[in-house]
Length: 197
Ligand SMILES: [Zn+2]
Image (cartoon, rainbow, N blue to C red):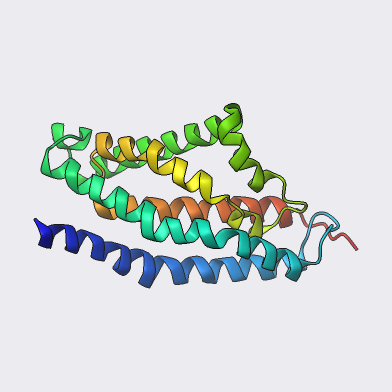
């Protein structure tokens, strides 16, 4: 049992640390450079100052993501498999179909989490840190209050358990959501073909 938990935890290192984090960082740098060449609006703050502020804001949230969120989700995925709790353990289908169903559940519930962050005043107090950024660029994707990350552990945990997501799917999904968010923000802020000055 201990060995299985340990090998599941190694997925964080193999998939997120060694592959996901460098890919995410590389994409972040490319988008940051692209925004410098094709920006939509005149900025309120110098870019490097913004990058520094948003990076500092992101440190507690990213630390919790790596050392709290992912380990907890992987333990839940492990528990789901051990006790056959999740949906994916209760029907027969090719692994690709099961993976797609799990992806849709996690993606849609992630969207609902965002809606709740806007609707519930208690959650909005944390989420507004992201939306009160004086400018909009790829560094906005880093700007999250760590309280929001802690809240998401309680919200997303049951969906990982009940969907029957595997440890690998949990890590890949988190990477996908981070990448998607950065890309959407950067696309919205720079790919309009208009220069401010
Ligand atoms: Zn929002």
